Amino acid sequence: MGPGKAPENGSAVARTLARFLPSLLIVSGVCYDLLTPKAFTAVPFFTAAPLIAAPLSSLRTTVLTGLASVLATYTVHARFGSHLDADGVTEILTVATVAVLAAGINRIVRIGDLRLASAHEIAEAAQRAVLPEPAERIGGFEIAARYEAAQEGTFIGGDLYAVQDTPYGVRLVVGDVRGKGMGAVAAVAVVIGAFREAAEQEATLEAVAGRLERALTRESVRRGGVEADEGFATAVLAELAEPPQGDGTIRVVNRGHPPPLLLYGDGRVSPVRAPGAALPLGMAGLGAWPDRATEHTFPSGATLLLYTDGLSEARDAHGRFYDPERRLTGRTGTSPGALLARLAAEVRRHTGGGMTDDMALLAVRRP
Image (tube, rainbow, N blue to C red; front, side, top):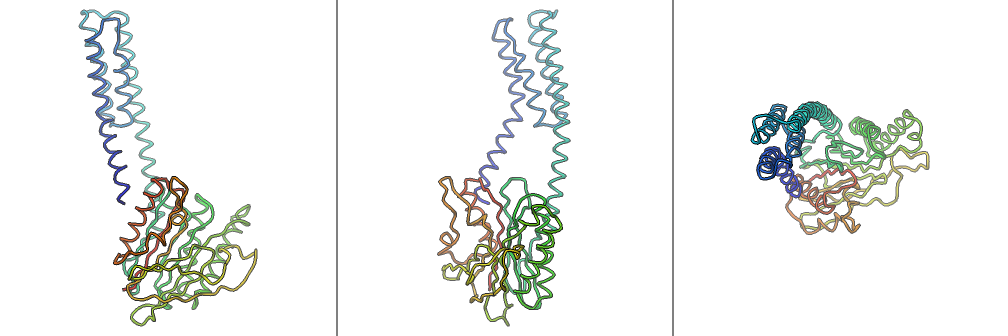
């Protein structure tokens, strides 16, 4: 992502400067003590050096910084005579004590970093298992998917996508599960698991939506409590007939989700809207009516973009929403992967890097 590079480069420069800061403090302390009368002390410089090195450097560097601080303290006092007075001994002991504490802090920080790295590895593995990256070509279509977490260091949340090549064509789902945390991740796994099974077995897209409805309802009841009444997910399902036998149509079932966008080869953009409103998945208890798929033309060279509201509800500093339909109008000749990378970059730039919701993107291009 283009806009993400500047903050990353700035952070790298800051970390580099911070690593040199302990040495700079020791040198500054020595200069300060040499240029001031004996009554003045440079101990604050010498104690700060190992404390700053502790969270930023290795144990070896932290220990060496502490030894250098102790040596510098002794040196600046020795210049006033061969015998140290009580103040000099106290200052040396103070710096030595801080150096030992800095070494302990370094160990604590390193153990925390290892645990955090392990947690990140587990999160990445969970993301690959629940939201695997689809192949670049499925059933004759060019495919790309992208997940952008609002919180840095987070890999997966309540947004979902899946692509399945089935006997009935290429079937897709993009959705947004209510809630956050592990409960939402568990619901995502349930929805995707049900989709992959139903997409292979059910002859119609409406039947696939029905299977997802029942699966999410069972999961909400199993979890009990508030989730039994409030667990739901918005979703849009699509079915594409595979080329060259395919007739160039898209069948779509929308369950309370933002409408997909159809990007034509000439730069036009058209929302793929459902004829009527529909409740999200998992809310059948509030009312029931049959799902009805709508058909839309999918010409060669066009791209179907499915997304979650993290894209359409991204706000800038003035509260203005990002409008994907307007922003994408006039763009031509973009591959699905490049399209999603550019969208992610634009949303980060639009929000100033302060996204408040996760964003799942799925693009399918018909060659």
